[in-house]
Length: 582
Ligand code: PEP
Ligand code: MG
Image (cartoon, rainbow, N blue to C red; front, side, top):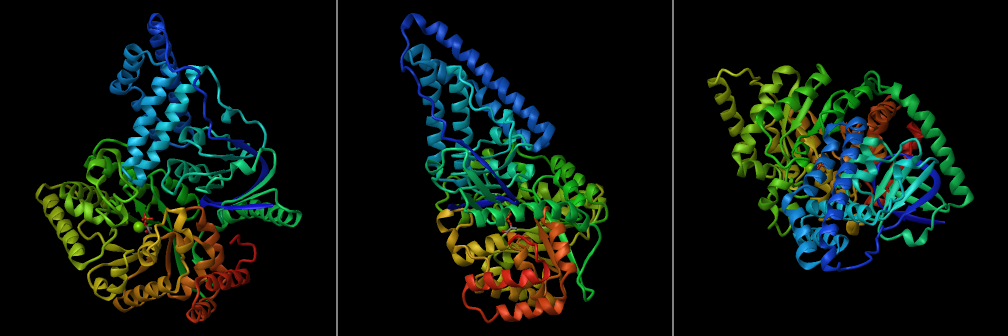
């Protein structure tokens, strides 16, 4: 039995035979063509390019139909690239002038672009390298006339194990047969990870090299909750997971119904459980799962799939869609958290020089450096706010000055809209993310100047423990249960209680069921989580009392080591939610 750990990007458990896809390297038969064959070779290149474009168009169509507009944008970008006259000219030029074979010329040019992108040292752009390599393989395959293992034609249950799955491959996975997938490369922000979540296929990425240890056909378990792949499990493990899988399936159907209604503890305290979204279309899903609102709308994703500046109207339309879907439920719109790993193509010049993007120009800093960008978004938020219960939230605030500057701009925008006679809501509550240690340490002062806090544990952990949240190499240092993190959360909760403002945890910590009793015991009454977690957490809340949760929080305060806290919490969880996968 072999156990491999990676980054869990889509929850769930699946068991089945492995289908192994290697790195898919094609052997290019020849480097040069004879002079008199050049014209026909250019023709062959054009035919292959057209075939590749047709295939991408087909994938775009599939993605649009099955997943929605925002995902099909990935393929639109591929198409744009493959039709780029500069790129096409470069490849054709190598065939015409240097007599390179079309296979060699296209591979040469696309790989060179990929290398250049990789050398920029920016993690988001590095993910785009996969898109270029995807194109390179596509084109080579069309030139060689080979058909790659047709993922969309899989007709039996499998677990896909691959070096990497490209966005097009992920979108074409047949959900009836592909039970889960696990890849050697990839991070949280890869398109593949985003698509896996949307498809609700259990998935793990960033495992590191492991394919040389499987040949295909072996029994495999993918535990998308824990980020574990178990190859050839022993009888006991297999039996354990089979049971868990079976129970999870039955439970999922039951849990959906548990999303309905309020989550009230056995001793009568309401816990608000909202959903986190990236795209407007996800609001519908949140509603189906019973979310009490949208606790975090990551608006920067509006910029991720496009190379164009977003207009005020585009912001406005996206926000209205979410607000209308949610009816009278609250919607927290977070202003753009661009930078670090979230850099849209058109802004790469702004960010490419950062020596350490996570500590560089990011988030509220970007907005305060580009007031036009910020103003556009704030206008759209205030205008959309007439449609429902909207709240605005600033990310990555580290100092009072930043918060005050942002609020000042908001006041300016109010005046502008008033002067222009445009309908808007002026009393939109203003909150901030607490995700930089400085903000947690000074929560008392910040609490006097905002209407609510939302604790972003994803960043709070990485900045407190100095461990990059998406770097698998330091994953073992990235400990949610570290006593330093818990201490900061307590400080924020106390400051919020003293100032009588609500506080939410919207980082992944609150989607991790074992931490929920602790968070409630620490005084949290609002959580915002990955949509799939909403019904599970509502069920948990209804099975516990506040005094039980407080007892857990008191006990945890005595522990010194993150690992001990986690195992204690796992044990405690069984008391309220014996079936929960942790
Ligand atoms: C966080 O940092 O916890 C958070 C919710 O924001 P994001 O994951 O978008 O950085
Ligand atoms: Mg954050």
